[in-house]
Amino acid sequence: MANQGRKLSRRKLALLLMLAVAIVIGVLIAYEQISVLYVLATLSIVALLLIVGFADLEGVSRRDVDEGAVKR
Image (tube, rainbow, N blue to C red; front, top):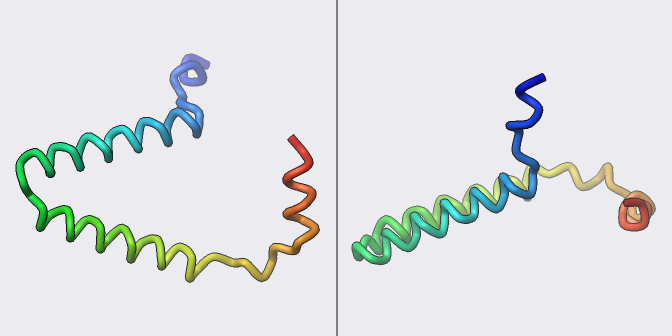
């Protein structure tokens, strides 16, 4: 039960992750480690393309998308 109060919501976790990435990028720019930034950018683009490539988009119909937008 004590573990419930300590769990971060998805939004807070995403914001925390974005803040950490921004800090890492800022530090790399400050120390002029542009080559490391190029490698990180390339790896993140590859990861994004893999996620999109393996996403199962055939199972999603237009009706499911419309219903999801209406429900809250």
